[in-house]
Image (cartoon, rainbow, N blue to C red; front, top):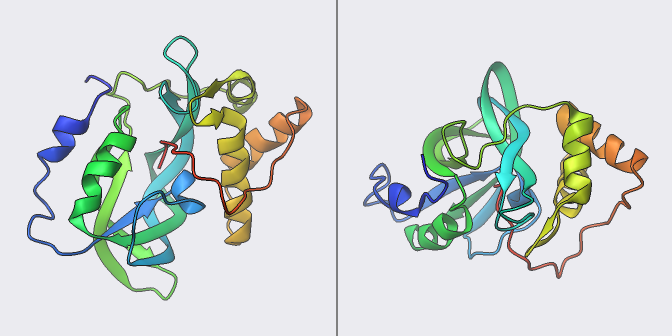
Length: 204
């Protein structure tokens, strides 16, 4: 499957006729939304785990030197924590363009912290897309992230901001935190997310 997914995502009909849709974010969307939304709530999805296995050729890397950003992969019994946004369908065009480097829309059950559930939407980059890099030792992932940068900024910024946002939510992610630790050992400075950060970044 080609990395460009805009046309494929536009054919999704699951939420046709809906005035509002919940979107689940597990990467940069946890700490930053560059689109209008009605409501924002911490949430999770079951059966998926976050992994830095997706290549970023257009935001946190380049076609010749891709960075690594988050996707989610199936894992029995796993829970992926993140942030859910209530949006209108008009936002899909922006999201489809932002996530065009391999991410496909998928309908999923979203669970809020009060235990309530709703069918919503998540963008997933699976192993069939051309930008998928796959599993690697977390030290090797950290090394690739440390040397990668793209139009949206350093790849390390994305990882470090995500780790900080997860801590603010009171959530743990051993994979993310292990990469963060390796980055620290590689002497990549930890940056605190700022409220005025507006750069776009794929890896939902």
